Length: 309
Length: 297
Image (cartoon, rainbow over all chains, first blue to last red; front, top):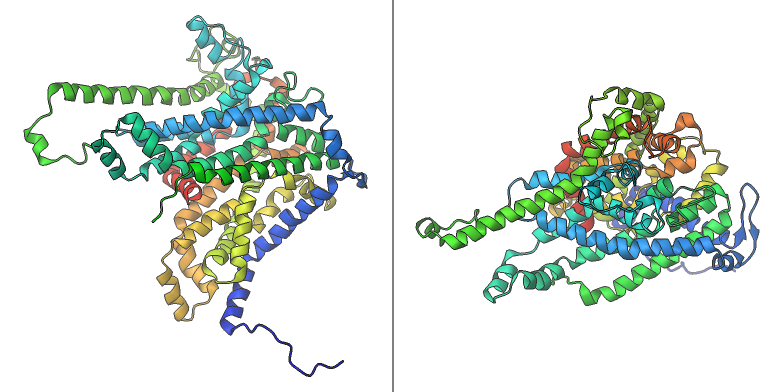
């Protein structure tokens, strides 16, 4: 068959073609990066999650078995619960404390640059050092905190050494490092136009009313951002959990109370080398974070306020 | 605010004494609470320094003393000799160096494409950037590990360095936001004069973006310098360990139960943290601006 007519095609102007070529070439590193380090790994880990893949052996297709056995896996359920605890309590605590610090840093007093530096410094401490230091500070017998508590006649708990207190200890440690969150809140606070407060004052609003009706709505976009990134980070939380709770035969010690989701995934993948099972754990994490993000974004228009210009 | 906007009549009509007293009390209260919170933030640092300078017997003392007696400066010598501190530091710096080069080039080029070039891919890729920022890295961790181990790259720095040359969603986003803020007229004028995108990237956009680049460099350095999970997965050979793995070596060997090596461990921990603090103090404004541009826009 011979074509007697020219194939119809969308003609791009020379300029559009050149823009496309340049844009593509400039973005090429990321295009390759997306394919090699994002698209392929996503598909591969989905595939692995349906296989038994004990490296260095090859993967064997086993259908949904990994996902089914997850629900009978006592340690998996425990890690899910622990991460839920860390997120549901830790993130609100951190957000509230960060906002509190930001309000302090926004007061009209002298030396704010120095106060701000002090508040932010903990964020710079390497996670390994943070784990080492806080494990020592919260040492039940020799630690700073329990000895300070003793001064005021309180017998301190065992902190990281007790299953009841290990997660609160972790939250205290992470709350100490909320500097970045505070800075974001501080910038949001400074972005609130002063006229809003002034006109509220004329209407007779008190401090709490101004806070509730002006400050909270005006910073809600930042809260939304920090909530989502915080939750995703918290669900994958690993380093300090691994260093304090540990892997091995007694993971997340004491009594698995520090066995967080990211830690359990690491143990299955890189200690037991069960890549198939670990991929299933990773995909459940992905689905949970996608679901949580979606729910938060869906409901956010009820509680976030974006200025219409 | 009140101090900044003194109006003339204030000078002639002082506020009543009760009001002035109340204001003074409020300011004092502010200082007290701000300082109290600052103390909470500072105490762990003080404790780190204090322990790093204590002799072994004093570390085990109850109640603990804040000021070491005598100052055990030799802990710092032990700190860098009990583990191969300088070797680990060198390894960490080598990784940081190459990651920095990769990040600076890839992220700025990609961000340029996403902000200044008018092509269909820019919207799609920007969508991918936003989605990737919300993606837990654990989802891609296993296949990437398998790729690198099949390439025989485990126990080398390559798995930690190579991905940096292919962009990073967070920093592409940050640079794009910055590039967008460069006045459009400047770029349009250059285009009319016949400048190519490469010219504009090198002669206009990059020179104007020094502060954003400083942010990128500072953040990349700090996150790479302190990274733990990446080196943990890829570096088994002790000779290749980074400082974060070296510090874990301390923790495994000496734990946190006290003992003679605790002073040395805290000294090494202090030295490990020091570069972060120096960088932060040197580039504080850059940092804060960086946090704000990525989070607020």
